[in-house]
Amino acid sequence: MSRYFPDWIKAFLEYSSHSEAPDKMRFWAAASTVAGALRRKVWIDQGYFQWCCNMFVIFVAKPGIVSKSTTVDVGMNLLRKVPGIKFGPSTVTWQALISILRDSSEEFALPGSGEFRKMSALTIASSEFGNLIKPREDREMLDILISLWDCPLLFMKTTKKDGSESIESPWLNIIACTTPSWIAENFPR
Figure 1 (cartoon, one colour):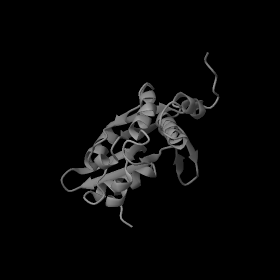
Figure 2 (cartoon, helix red, strand yellow):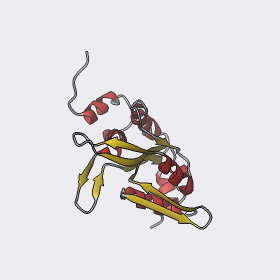
Figure 3 (tube, one colour):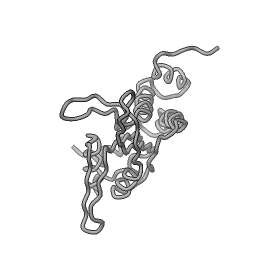
Figure 4 (cartoon, one colour):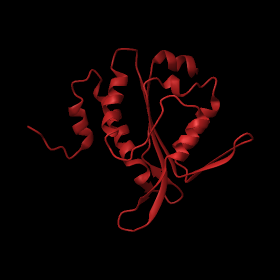
């Protein structure tokens, strides 16, 4: 017997209820999945900026206790079934991330207006956050992620070797997993 759920997150919580993961972790997996589906097509206009639905969700728990990676995979496997969603690699340099984000550019129509907008939207799911960022060795990646979290209308990068690159309306959604010991080692007080 199927049930109708007017709330997708509640439906996801029931769908994943046989998991070892606590409700809060499954909720955030669901929220990240919804954000990945909405991409930059949904925002709240704040006049001077747009409040976008991207998320940076990091599950922190001891290894093998609450099925962090499995919980991420439940949501991301559903998201992979949505046409047009683009995923980035779980291990990437900041230079490659910028190129992949630039290459993800696409246009979409605003409902009812006939107007088209550009976006460069990417979701990254990483079962090991330490494969994605190395805070002590690669400060540039942290700085890029902080800049991209704000969803600027234009992101520009210039390097002596590669020249200038710009990305119109970048949008990045990240869900990753790590352990308390990794956090302690890489983010001291």
